[in-house]
Image (cartoon, rainbow over all chains, first blue to last red; front, side):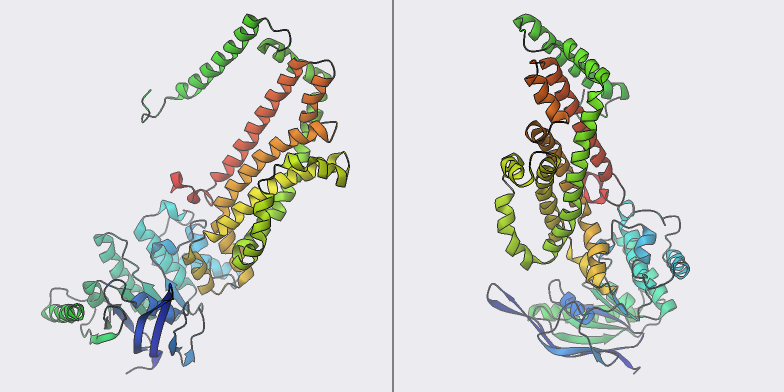
Length: 251
Length: 260
């Protein structure tokens, strides 16, 4: 096993709403290695996004702790960028402006160079001066990924980033994300409720139960990229997770 | 004309012109029919405007009114926006100040005239402070509202990129709230233009409001009264059009539903 980038140790999360306490995360322990691509997979509303927000430092766990590079996470950090669905891009800034947003500590030429590099990487050439309302959903999503990558983080948290896209764009975006991940070797934690998406992308799939979320099973996806999604091994792994989720629903 | 069809270019100009012409005709014949000696006909008003321009008082009055609005509205903008941003940003502060704001807000700026005159005397200061008061509240309210409606994703994204509170306020919260703030500025400028006329009728002896009341008081020149009224309306329209232009800026218009 490679060195642990992220360690979640006995993370519990309890929300209090209208005086009632609602357990959302129940004793989550997980290690993610440097450079690994991990999918958190679970039914809608199970608490996987809450877990991701906790890892990103937007929320503090009720008990337990999350360590990244051996340090306890106390808040958000530009070394780890959270990518929302495409609504996370700033509509008052151009494509360039959005990508340059986190680069305020750089000199103008350095900033220029980074912006150009990532505009090319996500294929938004020709749209430098465009505002997000003029972009399609897929382009906005690529823009948000570019904005995240531009600050050169070592981790990316993606919260159902392709959930709002049509199925064709979603497939294209998965391919692009893998290409970027292989080029930049970031540690990626990716939340999804789409089993196929998880098996296509991840090194490991963390299957979570309905609320309060527990880790049901961690599945190693031992198929090299590019993955043949009609191969016997792919279907076997996918169907295994299907059954796992089915069981989780029966309980 | 079908309500869905895009009107042709000449129609966009023709119909409003026709409506205006009909209104002028109605006015003209109503004056002629009733045989009133007091209320001026459109032609009298036109001559009135020509007379005002000839005597060169008109420009001075327009400039005086605009100057008062510029100072009062400008001060309300410079103070109101930061105040509103801060109140919106710290809900606890807003809870403390909000009751006072809500009591002061519905008081017509006109009701402040006696107080303004006691405190500042008859003159520019009183008039400008009334405009300031009238414009301030809509700007504060719009700014608070704008900030509290900023989607949390924007704030979280801003914090994620390592922005401190000051940067977060100026680079995320302010631009995100700007469309709402612009709406507040538009309302405030409209109010400022209403208030300047009222204030000039009482507190000063220049400006378009003074022109209205002075034309009546010195010789019941109702042709000049109506002429001044029309000019007030026209300038109000120009000011509003100016602010509407701001709403069309690309960094702002995303916030308006028809331009998503």
